[in-house]
Length: 208
Image 1: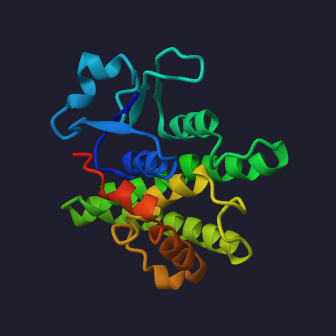
Image 2: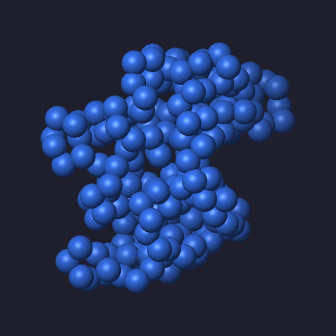
């Protein structure tokens, strides 16, 4: 049975479409137009009480009963557990996946998201302070990622859900005012991921 993905064409939506494609899970997309307020409709709130995309409805969970999951990080962990893919069973190998997934959720998402916000402001006075603050922090995070990838092909060693989570936001690097050529290891990782057919399908999926 097919998973329903409630999403829109944002970095957090793309994390999940990429994971679904890489895990070869059948799914259908139910667009949630966040520009028109669809995220506040009761149908969506019943599975995503924080009124944020993405969310999924899986009619065939491991125990055979339907389950809904909201928050992109929770969705990735659920899908990894469901399929046994891109989420190691061994605790020592799983720890770096969890570390880098939390790194993305806590920093490499919220900070670039603030860059998106302040860059769009028309008032130079309103824009200047916030844009510098969050642009500086975003570049710092790209540097952290670059150092991690200096000695690792993927962020947790083997390809994992953490890579999919981070890629969703690195995909918007131009909007972050970041040139990947400044971060050679990130650029290598980014290009290697986008060479994967599953990633290409995930980003080609129509979410809006």
